[in-house]
Image (cartoon, rainbow, N blue to C red; front, side, top):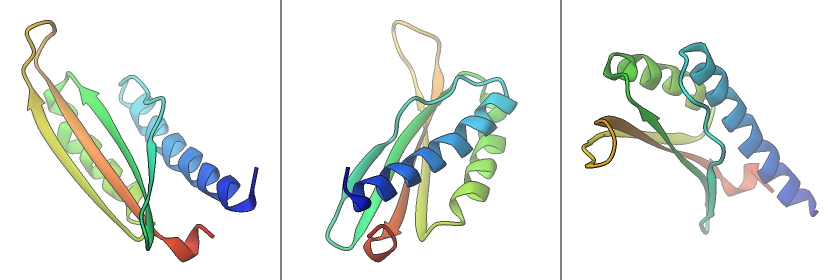
Length: 104
């Protein structure tokens, strides 16, 4: 594995670990994977969290902000999902951006 790939994988593991620590604290199932997108000047790490307890949305979003503020930029969006096959839930999508020079 190349040094650049190792650094990207380490950042991915770091972000996933921090998020899963928060999710475990609030009894929410952990996320298994986040996607890495390579753009010209930055790398982006994308993922989503499904919440069935609407009372935890604001708390989880605030915890994510605490985690992501250490990186270049981020966005967090949530959307209520109404499905025919399972209870209504909220999907929190996130994207963390890092300048390419950091991940080289």
